[in-house]
Image (tube, rainbow, N blue to C red; front, side):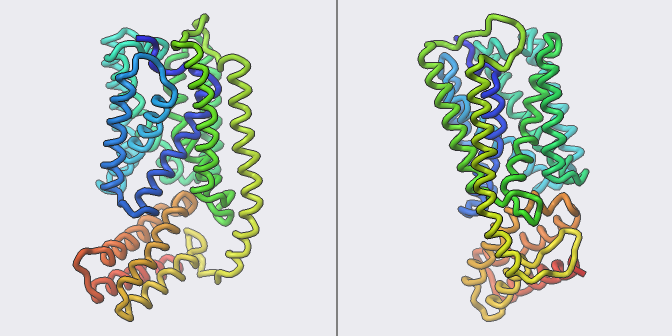
Amino acid sequence: MANKVPLVTATFWVIKILSTTVGETFSDYLTVNVGLGPVLTDGLVFVVLAAALILQASSRRYTPWIYWLSVVLVSISGTQITDFLTDTLGISLYVSTTLFAVLLAVVFTVWYRQEMTLSITAINTPRREAFYWAAILTTFALGTATGDLATEALGLGFRNGALLFGGAFLVTLVLWRVETWQVPAFWAAYILTRPLGAAVGDLLTQDQSLGGFSLGATRTSMLFFAVIVVLVAREQVAATRAGSHAEGKSGRASLGRPADLVWAAAGIVAVVGIGSWMSAGAAGQSAGSAAAVKQASSSKLGDLSSFAVIIDDVNALTAKGDLAGAKARIKDLEVAWDAAEAGLKPRSPNDWHALDGAIDGALTALRADSTSQARCGAAMKTLEKTLKHLQA
């Protein structure tokens, strides 16, 4: 077989970083906005991922659209695995980060003993391809855990996270240019693109009151997805014209030909330019809505008044016995809370988890197959009490 993975160029890194945000946002959209829930979303993503990897394995050469579809799906799956360990099983981020680091070391050790190389310039046998995708999945899980640990447990936030991971990523690119460091630097950069992409995505999506640009998840995802489609289409056309995946003539790493640099730069300019333009439009809307909301008592998480308004509405509907209306209204709380997670959580992880658990309790009560006004009322009182305690 020809080499089944792309040459590492400037466009490769741009697509990789943008695909992280698109994958994570799409997963959240299915889970929260569509209402599939984490279990159904996880199952659906793993099924589609399996189909994509089968399609990737059946191809005899590098096919850009298949490869990048697989990367996006692996991105979602790696995030879901980490979130399951942290949110469902309650495993510490320190433990999960260590676990995935050890697992990745095991994958690399077995890969090297079998093939005597970890290079990606010759992924041209089924076994090498299996090792490659196992490493890719593990790097995404490790990158998710590392990013969450830095932004949550260490309280960096997405702004500082973008600077930290962006700087570390640039350092790995410099080391990648050194022949003896090519392989470890590539995999280190691959791990860093996961938290870097998440931090950049959060910077654009979060409300300006939380330090973001107020684009929202939908507009940010559409912008990133459009840039990805253009860059992948360009890769597809180039691969089709070449007829096979050509190897570089030099063993020295580079960011590709001048054309690759131009296309990558155009993608970055499009994201920054269009993002800034949309952010300017969203600024007025954000300021207007902020002025209309009464400021709540101070809390470590900041202003929680917008959530308090929804909670009051759900409480009123529950008290009247309108459980269907309460169930519909609490959906707004779920969506708003999920959208603000990246901005609120780093401020006070313990307070965030306390309120998140109370919200989950209310959601479970109102969405139960067999529920009652008393049960829903008790769950809402717990939620209201938790909110007031945090604001005290």
